[in-house]
Amino acid sequence: MAERKEQLSLEEEGPWRYLGMEPQPGDDLEGEITVRAFTVNSNIPLLDTLAHEFMFRHPAVKVNVEWVVDYLDSLVTSAEKKADLNQVFEEELRLSIATGRADYIIFDNGWIDLDVAPLSTSGALEDFGPTLREDFPEGFFYEDVLEAFQVDGRQTVLPLSVSYTSIAFDREWLEKLGIDPGAVDRVSTAQVMDWYQQALELDPDLGLFFNSPPIDQMLDLERTAYMDLVDRSCTFDSPAFIKYLTQLTKIRNSEPLLEAEAPDLVGASPTIDDFSVYQLYQHTGKLRGNYQYLVNDPDPLFDGLRRQMKVFTDSKPALAVLDAARPHTVLTQWQPLDYLAGPYPLTNSKGELGIVAQESFLLPASMQDKNLAWEFIKYCVGEREEPRIYGEGPIHYYTPYFPTNRYNLGTMAEDVTNDEGLGSTNAPFDTGIFGMDPQIYIDAVEDLFTGPLAPLEYYDQIGIQEFIDEMILHRLTTPEECAEKIQGRVTIKLNE
Image (cartoon, rainbow, N blue to C red; front, side, top):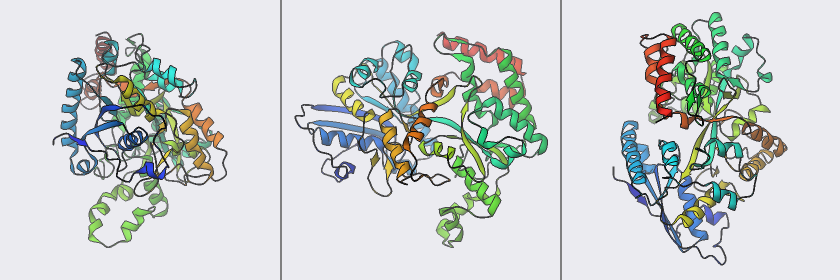
């Protein structure tokens, strides 16, 4: 599949028409820049919309948005094919950055896996820090969030939006364990394992995670507690980590071996919404919303979806589900779910919240027109009077995740008070709380993103899964031997 360049025409109808945008008076920006990305995650692509808006405000500027796989192609491209194309794309990016030929902005919406540390250290990527301090007032961004994505003090990754790891539990099971769901604030990986071991004593057939993804998926977060990316050191050979591996092995050996019921629908990454539909069905025999409609509609067109929906009706009981939190996730603090407890922020054993940059910008140092590139990036991450995008279909926010600037989060919070419910979401609850003071919501998000944070993708660059598989799946090593192997691998990688 050849890479295609999207042609953005200002003559077409677009969201900016509805927002009343006008060209900037006295505008002197001109030139042409290119933004490269892998594939579109939504039928209302953020990057295309921002490029349209920017060009409408600056008529003498042209922004070329290049997707490897556009939205329509993404619907018919297999996961295997996407993985192959993405690998080729990443290799091309690395080579062009390293050789100084990268004359473009990189937009990463979760698909691009670059090892940022060496590119930052070598100066191959621009440091956004000085221009951020010059062009934005102090306190405009969540400082701890931006700092989490720095490498040696350099802001070479500029996240537009982030999410954090959240976990929801079967409410009934927490109560069986004597845990008050309303008294829980955050949950650590160690607590999850302790609670699950207690639950297994009551029901040996209970799974840990809904639809049976691997039990060690929490390791992506827990490993961050034993790595110091600044000091380039690690403590995987510590008694604490060996204890964690021992517990992980014990649970894995006692957990019932369940098979995913509907991988095409939920696969290895079921969501809190999926878990809520399952819980509702188990307690009431009913499916929520469109799912119930599909069950009652005899049209054979929906036969495939009905087969996939077996995940909601036939899956095995489980204690919890992990998910990437979105803005509406926070609302459950004031609007508890009937059958689910949480979702709660999930931390590692040191209390650090795992965060992921869902949409971010990187700027190669070889970019020719850095000034124009920065003006575009600044527009994308900056203040929006209207946070929503008005396109075809329902209303959407410009990002479905948490914006990294406080201003835009505040305007999104206003929707909580007018029953708009933080825009178009697929949440298992009413996403609007009419009459609620938006400051309460703003303060809750402020608390989430103030304090120790762990950028998960920065830790993913050092592979340790093979050692975990040796220990858990193949039972070839002990926890002590596994920890020793991980310590050696990570020590070498951190000091390369």
